[in-house]
Length: 145
Image (tube, rainbow, N blue to C red; front, side):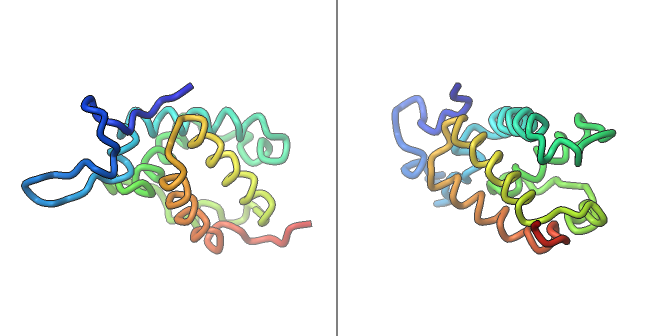
């Protein structure tokens, strides 16, 4: 199912779109469809994560609706959208959970799959995942088995 429309009504590729008055280019966030598109990706992402036996235990007793709201704000920022994340720093939010590299990689894999399933172009997926990868030192605190 494709949630994203990165072509305008005139068929122009998102790389070709720009604000003529300011010369500003379209952010990845806007190129993929903004808030509704990010929400769809986050919903799909959590379906995948919660179905993963390796990751599901981390989410027991967690308010998933609240977590999704925070995740939408984070993904929005990762894609160059409005910076409105108001949650704890990532290191604080994940402290004491014992997340290892394999767990982090599994989460990143699910996010990649959700983005691709939604039709996000590969170059945007790569930029987003590079940003996510840079957060690994803040999240991972245990060695992989």
